[in-house]
Every structure is written in C-alpha cells, then in structure tokens.
Image (cartoon, rainbow, N blue to C red):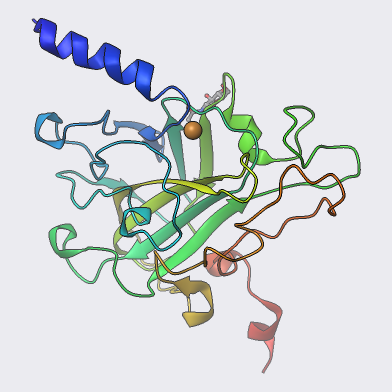
Length: 258
Ligand SMILES: *[C@@H]1O[C@H](CO)[C@@H](O)[C@H](O)[C@H]1NC(C)=O
Ligand SMILES: [Cu+2]
C-alpha cells in the first residue's frame, strides 16, 4: 500500500517536470526492460538504467551531468547481439526542435567500475533535420522537419540497431535529446543503460568515431547555439559529434582503400 507521502511526491513531480522528459524504459532485442522512474535513487527497484536525480534540462555542454544525467550505476543489464534493435521509450517529451543522438561506450571491465570517462563514446544512430524547403526549421510545431518531433505526441520511442559485427562486451548505451526550441539556449537530456553485447563480432570503432562526454561539443558550436527564431538563416543543420559507427554494416570510403 502506498503511503500518502509517496502519492504526494508523485503528484508534485508530475506537475513540476511537465516540460521536460527522460527515458523511462527500454525494449532490447524484443524484451521489455523497465527503466528508472526518478527521482530518488534509494527507492528504485533494480533496473538496467543508470539512475538520474531529475530530468531538468542540462544547459552547459561541459556539465558532468551530460554523460548519463548524473546516473553512475545500475544493478541490472540487458543482453543483446550485434544487429538487434534497441528502443528507448520516454515517459514524456514536449520539444519539437533538435537532434536525437544514440551513443555507446565499451566498458573495460564490469559495469560497477565503468564510469564512461575518456574518449570512448561512439554514435550508433542519429537523427536531425530534413530540409526540403517546406518543412519548418524554426520554432513552429508543424510541419517540423526535425525527427525529434516524432517523439512529441503518442509515439515516444526511438529504435536503433546495435552495429553489426560489434565486438562483444559490456557497454553503456546513451540516448540523448538536444532541445533547441529556445534560441541560443540548448537543453541537453540524456540517460544511460547497461547492455551486454554477445556474439562473436570483433568490430571496434577507431578514434575518428569516438569522443568524450562531456567534450564532444562546445557551448559555442553553431549547431548548439542555434538562433531558432531567426527566419533569415538557412534551414540546414549538422548534428554535433563524430560520424555514426555502422559496424561491419557499412564502411567509410577511405576504409576500402588498399
Ligand atoms: C513505438 O511507437 C509506435 C507508435 O506509437 C508503436 O507502434 C511501437 O510499438 C512503439 N515501439 C516500442 C518499442 O515501444
Ligand atoms: Cu523541457
């Protein structure tokens, strides 16, 4: 039976956090995995997601909280194989402008000692803006050319593929939304979960695919500082960070050179 204090706290959270959002569950290779529901790590059941203290926007690209929204540990992990799909599901999301970035990080050993430090993060998926001269780059809701707008409304999940051939091991997977609806005031939202990649793959991204988090972008970068209200700027957008690592599924042109 829930105590009245728990019910009161839940009602308060719903009210105060209405404009933001976080990943609250996952589907990994077809199996549902509940995530952390916030905001009190001591009270969480064991989940695959690293616990986060709140889902307020992170406003600085250099913030340590950028890595996993402050989450540093989780008790469980989900098994997955290269080529499997992973979906993140947001409990709520309301912003229609900005990119979606999905990153992984190979732990050197067990999850308990895996803090995501150093330039070990690589993207496995990203989505930004599709400029066709009709879709809207600016702070107008429709027809938005931003993929992040697909998370607003009924469909609050994003599905990515674990890179084919990816080397087996313990990995963090990090889902990041960068909300750009406030001019020149980026808002970062990111959560991490623990997945164990099985199989016999050996593909590892080289340094050109990897970055540190925080560190992959600077506060002054033009794809972070976006004057979203300026109707005179070109409706194009480049997602920050290194290129997406596709595993053995696709290679960069220079990797085919003899
Ligand atoms: C994602 O959302 C779509 C649209 O609501 C739904 O059909 C699909 O089942 C969802 N997928 C997951 C993994 O939740
Ligand atoms: Cu918000």
